[in-house]
Length: 240
Image 1: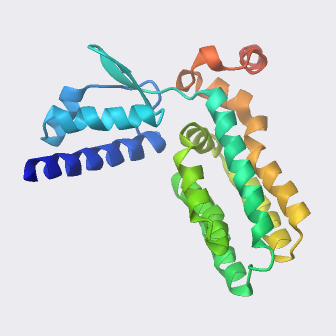
Image 2: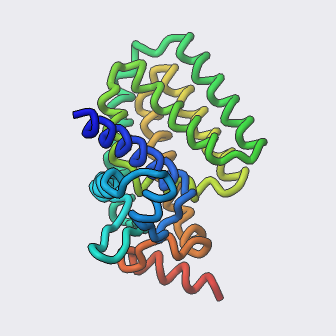
């Protein structure tokens, strides 16, 4: 029983560590991983590593090729769109619930968050900016008590979250994101749900205008078979 508990603890720790590195792009899409090498590096048996790989496969974060290798999954555009759809649906539904519950204290908390986002931009810390961005959105779900909805977003955004990190490549993009956050915050506090939703949808669709540039810069990160032809051809033509 003690051995099983130890194995379970190791498996969870390995899973969490690998997922963190995949989601932060420290382990890049297409990176091959070996059960034996990771087990040796972490000084554990291969069993918890295999189990962690299986969990990551269920998350869509790795592809397992039996008797061959395990590879960090490339970003799948069809899943990016589906994950964004889930997020947009839940974010807009949550804005309906926010009316009447949003206090001046909540406004102050979120304004501090925006100040931190600006500081992260000046520090050229994209990872910190994404964390603060998530914290900004999460707080609105805390206000409404819809924590399960936020957990659903987090658990179903593995492809969307990685392309988001690729999108915050320069200060102009981050600055535009912060401005969008300010518009959402102002409309929500004023009880203007209609405009809050308009700003939220524009915010969540921001990636669409950056796809060609992201494809040109990181072509190896994507499953080429699943890229819409229009986006793929536009990116190829732009290279010349």
